[in-house]
Amino acid sequence: MRASAKATLLSEDMARVAYNAHAFIPARGMVKTARLHLGPSGLTATATDGYAIGEDAVLVEGYDGPAEGVTLHVGREGLADLDSAGRKDKKGFGRFEMVAGDGLIFRPANNDTPTAAPDVSTEADEMIWEMLDSLFTRLEERPVNMPEIVAFDPSLLARFAKVKAPKGKGGLGRALDMIVHDAKAPILCRIGPSFRGVIMPIDRDVHAENVGPDGLW
Image (cartoon, rainbow, N blue to C red; front, side):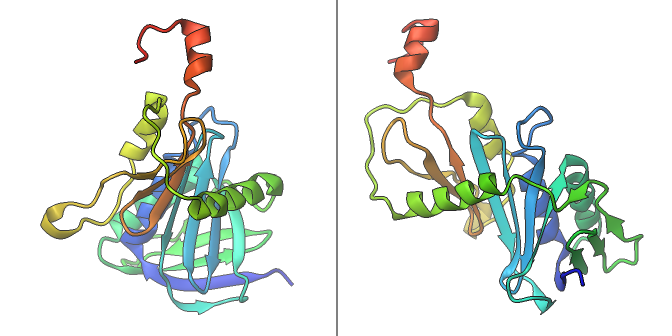
């Protein structure tokens, strides 16, 4: 029997999670799908192109499924459809259902047609996702150490500019908070209360060899 999981969640929050994952799998990226996991603690979406990672989560109510949850992998089109359906439902609470080996469906509260992601799969390189989970754990445990200079690829930073997060007091709440260990190691990022990510800095020595020292401090 295929494992299945169901839960109710705020539609706008589901849309945010799908949108943020979509921002981290560019059309020509090496990883074509995001990982969606529905469990007792909530719905979590993780996505990467190999150079930056984005992960967001939303709490759920009325969870019905196995304690370990259910995981599926969803492509760009499916994430975009979930984002659109959730935003249209505005302040409603929709029903999110996942079936391992089959697919997922989102049933909005506004009685619109349920949304089924068209590009869902259970097949993925599990080694990639295990490495990402391990990377988050390692970075969160390392002490903070600020190097004097860090270089970034602007296109990778631009993905974090797309991240949606709940606004705090005064309408603020989209600061990109970074934990920097050294100028060449992956950097842990946070935006708002639920989004976390990782970005790889540019190796300044390699950059200088490839394009020359101009543009570097």
